[in-house]
Image (cartoon, rainbow, N blue to C red; front, top):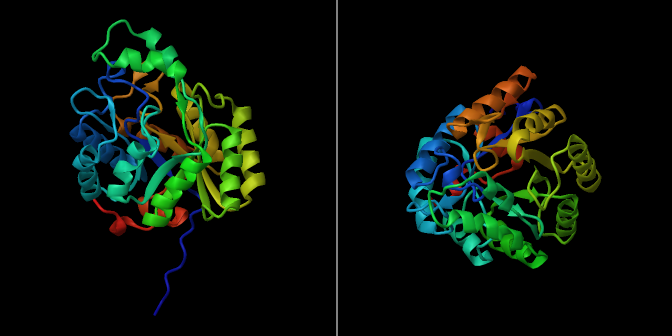
Length: 317
């Protein structure tokens, strides 16, 4: 029997797309996916444009408010699986107003290949965005944003271990470790020392959320240097930058060995002052940028190989 030659993945960049999130509200863009049909359609379009991983939240279809209801997730997860080969990555962050039990409800039902996992408690403030709008589509939006000055996004060591035991050990889920500041890298290293996660780990280094590390290239290089010190070669990493630095930070990450996350969760825009009409538009743009730099977008199966995922056949949706 001939054994297939191993694929050369050195030139491949994983593009993740975060479809809707829990930060932006419906007033901010008519293109923000809200209903299960809109989320499925937008996710499928992003996969067709070149996203290997789809990072998914749910929203109440009646008013666009972030939802943890597994029944809502199950209205779009099977459709995405049937229409694409993309890796489905379900949030365990949900929103800062949800309990840990709420945040785990859908992943425990769906048993996806990947889940996000926030690596530390932090202030997570959205309230400056409220000043940009005078009228609101739904009455929950303005209080949701203005009240965020009192929010602590809870992710204690006990919470992190609980999520690992439930999903990592219980369902074979691989985590997208969301690191909003340098201390979160040290938190992850501590958890690895305790045996909670098996290298290689996948870091999502996040810039530009008020309460986390700022959008600055020096910060990107410092976070990368710290990760190298803590994890050696036993990790892969990706970058997302909230807002206008989304594309430039992604391009810079690709040039120094990283992967990229885009999507309407992270930025509503495609150019300065111009709303993105879809997640696919952002994926298409970043894919074009990395191809001009001499890289290629990883396929879903290449991403699975790079990250050591359990495979599409082992999910429960």
